[in-house]
Length: 292
Picture 1 (tube, one colour):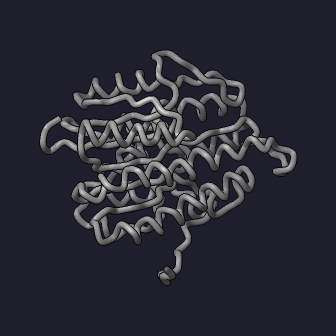
Picture 2 (cartoon, rainbow, N blue to C red; picture 1 turned 60 degrees about the vertical axis):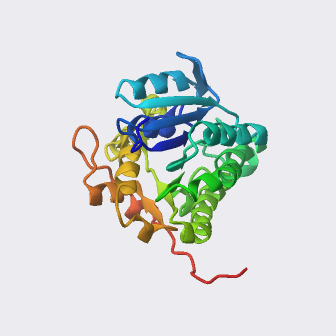
């Protein structure tokens, strides 16, 4: 890693949005630290009745093909000892952290069933454990490095589910919690030049979405036409990080499609992902009052 290279940690990097971010947020000279539970190349997980590729090694291979260094850190973000281990490794090996991107999530098969919450498994609580609780604990242990790294950035990956009914109360509570946590962290970080945002990634054309879409109707296929590529959020995050004025946005919840449009980021085919603000709502403005 060169002196100018950035150290970037991405959770949930084995598949889905996290994988797309890990593979697209870096530049040559950077080091991407990929965190997740699925390590071995070619490994798959079952989700919604489909086998989805899930491998940190495969993600790392795609990153290294771009001339970017990659470090694979297997971890279960439910476990404090694994989170503390991440902190120890990054502190000892790099001594800095330029970007912390929370993209990990735990998706239960019951999540998208069109049923009331009391007919779904209580195991859905894992959505809170990984994606809210783990985000807090990981941010907590890595804060000491973030505040000593100039112009660092913390990103929480969220969604429109914090403003509309989406998949039920557990999912909504997690996403609303992420947005508020990013806002409150921004207050604590502001004197240390650390920018904290929540980013609504929107619907993303990853392997899972593509497989699910084959069993859906034409209306769903039409909806997907406005989707973001798997790499879009990562490119948006990098363009946002590179702005000199990003601290002006600290504490805000932003929509990736809107930030991308403002910064000139598109899908690989040149299309602009749809914001969905009009259909699903937009981020809320939190009150600036402070109570200690």
